[in-house]
Length: 339
Image (cartoon, rainbow, N blue to C red):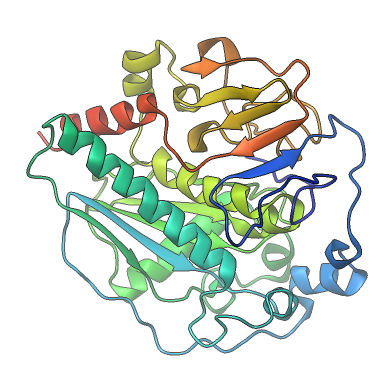
């Protein structure tokens, strides 16, 4: 997925919910035109250099990962390294623990998504003996591990980030057979990382060589170029990819693309509400259409579980509520995996 280029609270939106307080946020779409960016959101040359590794970072304290053993649905979320300018952006909140406000928001969103899944499967009497665990992992600083060359630090590929992440997990003894390991990465200028994605070959939680799945959500891209609502949805989005498959998506919506399990619903004549798995894929393939750049993965609006079209749409609202088709897809995937 490719990062967007919007401001922190959605460019031009006057009816935007406060990012730190709302689970759903409206984003004004510019449909390819330049957005109006407030002074506090202008990325300076100094910030750009910092994003490329030119500024000092906070030292990471001792790891705090707790191994809770093996659960049927097990998600562990890791805060990645933040540059100094990013900590300053958030008033140094969470600096001691390593969990900045966007980390906390992403973690809470993932937790909420798993709670929705729990309610869905319980109400239908399915997967009755399944254990669900979501926990915090220790901070990750890949500059001290597998990403070491200057070129990789400046412009890593998504696979390089995920391979390095996997190396750190292995060194920590944190690899588990059915765990989704989600890294919250800060790379607003890392085009090749995009919004995030899953590691090949460990893209699903079904065991491959005794491992679960590794995935990354680029919260640096969502925070600097989009909004807190997009940060929440992308964290959920990348976690969901590890619990969905082409076969299951085809069973549920008749499309082999799991993005099509999502929904884009008009709440009024000008607003389109987008669910997590459809985030970055619900608008037209134009700059500034919802998220600043459109996702680069599979999608077909005609095959979406529900898509009301975007003619006349000026605002995109991002809800953390999972579509029923996404919940059904996750349920079927786990039913097949845990047999």
